[in-house]
Image (cartoon, rainbow, N blue to C red):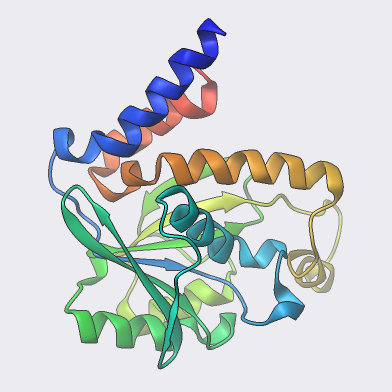
Length: 219
């Protein structure tokens, strides 16, 4: 019971205080990547959609999305600043179309964008944050790179890689759903991400440092 109390206090501090105490909010647009439609719901490739849905749930907003143009849109308030949320409905490979239009409409610069996506090079249950870099073969990121360049922030949600399989099998793998055991791990990770989401909006070095403590359980 004593350990649970410390953990709840920790999540509360992250959710309510970390951005305002650590500096200004850096992010103005958060993009969750995925494919629209029930056919793709719950698949590994839709990790970005799942994260944004859980963030709205944790914030008490509920499933409030408005369909405009090339995506579903919502908003949250972080550190006193309104942050736009976007789930592109262009299909994964054309995500950059929606992201580019959203940036132009809202006046958000590439370095103020956070893209949440699945990553097969990271173990299921692990999450990493970085700024810039390559696309790692991810077609959604390739499309965004073409639209706004590579200078945006990425929240990389690990879904694991099917070992010893070819490219075709990887494509099938990311479009498959989690097994029952995998789903338990993914649900735990979703909750961690959503409850500490404000962390990823602020200073990148601070985000990496504190998230490292979360991953290691040293809080």
